[in-house]
Image (cartoon, rainbow, N blue to C red; front, side, top):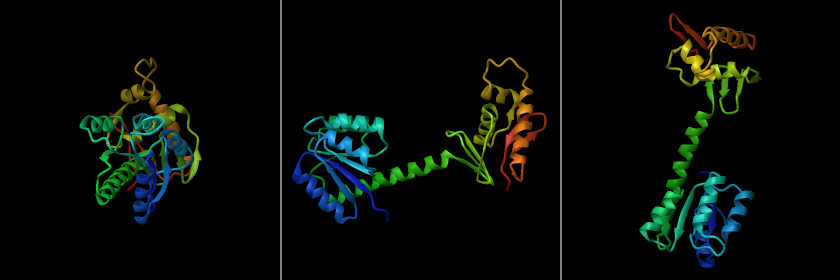
Length: 232
């Protein structure tokens, strides 16, 4: 099991120490912050898997900390506080906390809640990682980074060529007409001929071939247009 890093942001010495003692026995790495400012500074220096955050802090309240965290870093937060009012719970969840518990919770349940959050985050990250790239035999496309690798080598494509490739690759189940591709890549106000798509597809295919790709991933669908497919 991987070791998770926890930040405890709480002004109460006894609470921090009891949480630290229990979590370290369960195999967690733990760091402590006594103020909201200290917690935010630590988030700049270290990478945490989860924050246990009290609402009552001496310099800035936990609501402010929660808001800043959600705007700046990706780390789940579990609010752990004396304030058990339903309105506070709703507020905490609405501003981005992943769970809201009162400090009288049993340690075993707290641990179960922490692991539940970590599992959800792991699933989300896994899905995100899968979406970050479009992978085919010998071909990897990174839409956000605007990069295409063929057999591990970065290849350069023009903006329009890249946008065409991504448009087709992201919806492999769909056959696009030339008009749809023009609208997607050149925009609805494009006044040229839709045969411009054919010219760019020809260039892309030639580029794939010259780079050593052993198949042509862009397929012509007769009387309709084009689709993207992968070699089985």
